[in-house]
Image 1 (spheres, helix red, strand yellow):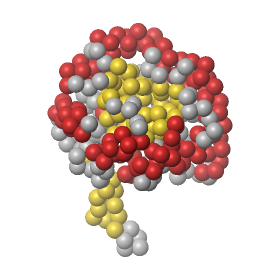
Image 2: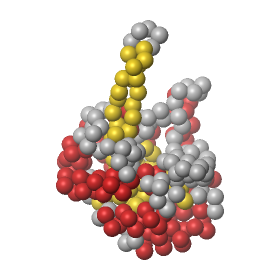
Image 3: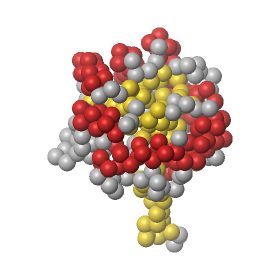
Length: 280
């Protein structure tokens, strides 16, 4: 396995600082966040993130992204894109950028659940979108990835497989995300990996835990909420997860996105790579 960091989780560092620091700590690669974001005085994971490359004008930034990555001696584990599957022009653009960078794979985001559109309609439309995306990815020699993510149409491995089943696994695949599965979509982890088979393309590791809010629902039952936790402190066992991945034969990228923020960023990333190395 090779280990990388998704820069959504390194908001305080510039791109160059992130690449240099992660390389010095012993990480193998980096997964760049590419999106247009709101700017804030204080850097945050989702706004004002200094290690995020803007989507606007991204083609012109390809040489700089490649330079920063190579100068640190890092590989690209993929691209963390935010283009919705239904926006064909934007997805095709990100596929081309991914190919130009030699990054091999890029995330495509999926519709959220809980709105006014019934799930079957969201699913049918998105399946058609993936059928459009797959041959474009094949033409460029890259892979479009969907993620097991809470509050979307693919919260679980089984839902992701249902969405992609029958498409070419060389050019579409699944990001299996341990922390997201704590929030929603939890299945037996090894069974989920086995279910995905060739569609298991990439792995994201973070951790989460559920806590009582202290409030009650209208019916008097306890209300719970989740929060992101350090890798060693969440409800999922990262050690057991890596064991399951190895047993399944997975030897690809494991990308960490630790949003716990309980320790300073540099300590957090250094501890995470030391912990992961100790497990393998």
